[in-house]
Length: 165
Image 1: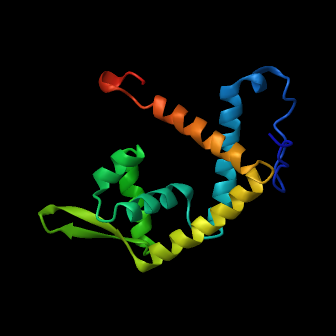
Image 2: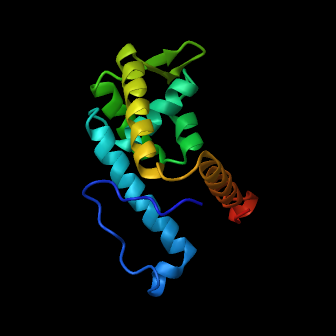
């Protein structure tokens, strides 16, 4: 690995890396997640959207015509939270609810042209943010990190009966 990445402007160090919890991998991953979430929030704020809404919009574009329930399951969001996020996207004209022709009691969700534009802009902004944060890592280091974190996420998915994998 290359040298430790410099913190983006305005970010503080997490303290002495040889002290207490900071030696634990789980704590370090939590702290990295907090830093990345704060950076993503700041980055996406310039596009006028919150990370959760951006995530839902992204999933919606990948699975155009999904129901709220389908998106809720896919993203692991509580259905009540999903309703609020879709309401927010609809108020901002980034998504629309359309009646499902096969079942008039349900709606299919579609991204509007504005929603597609927001997704492109947000992706560009997040790409720039990630380049800043991970800039001192090699492409190989980043790929190893992606594989390891995906493996950890996959192994934590619940099994039948509520047990973790």
